[in-house]
Amino acid sequence: MLFVHGVAGTPREFRELIDSLDHTRFQPWVFYYGSGARLEMVSTLLMQLFVRLRQWHHVDRVAVVAHSMGGLVSRDFLLRDWDANATEVVKTYVTISSPFGGMPSAAKGIERSPVVLRNWYGLDPNGAFLTELFWKGKERRRLPAHIAYHMLFGFRGGGPDGGSGDGVVPLASQLRPEIQEEARTMRGYDENHTSILRSAAVAARLNEILAEMR
Image 1 (tube, rainbow, N blue to C red):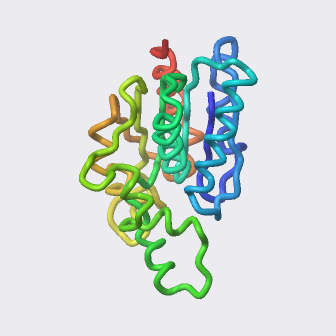
Image 2: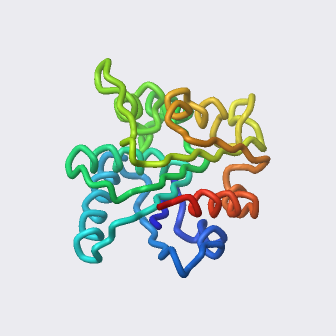
């Protein structure tokens, strides 16, 4: 299993989820990266490391679990790896509280801040990175059909500018229509952006999903 954290995150955030795994069946791996970098660069690095993982360890079945901005990085990686290598190694994909509709605060930061973090461009709701996660011109980009995609989201804490959300990511961003179209299942939790990773119910749901992996 490959875990991908979000902005300013660390692999430690997945401790409870990793502890809950069936370790006779799953070996956890974590991707730790500098989350201030351009998301395209992070995705490229992940793809390169994943190719090595396949080749060196002869891995043929993988589940990817991503939190927050890690969902954007991992989706880009999965699409690009499929285009480049067409391997069916990733069988299951789970995102948790990911801002697939972007973050309005990132767009404001790009416009107004004297210092712009590179990852803000990837989080810009109208930016090229987010658009190209789902569209190539007028052609819809979808996850490969062999990947079972499941979406988990939180709704405690409200949106950062009011409205609904998990205290960090607006609910509308977590529930972008294109991502809902691809999800085999969606499940919401009364948790905020970080507590969702410590939720026993989320851990139980993840293990239900993994039990279906073949």
